[in-house]
Amino acid sequence: MNSARISITSRLLRSAPVYSGMSLTTDDFAEFIGGDPDDNEEVPFRDALTELAVDVEVDSVEAVRDVRERI
Image (tube, rainbow, N blue to C red; front, side, top):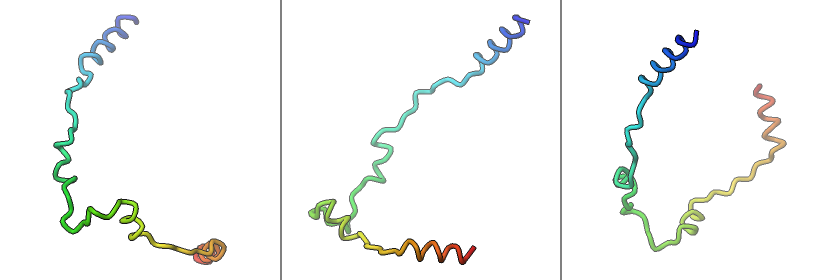
């Protein structure tokens, strides 16, 4: 029985995947991190996000009632 375990283990070790050493570098993302010509980089990031923000007021009780009515 021990020889069967050793045989199975040795087959698993021989067929185990080997780390190929591949990795990602910043060069791989160069095309995605380029500047946007329409972007005004003089505006601080926080202010730019504030310009995009939307205030949403939701009556949670009414929203729950609406969902229950649909079900």
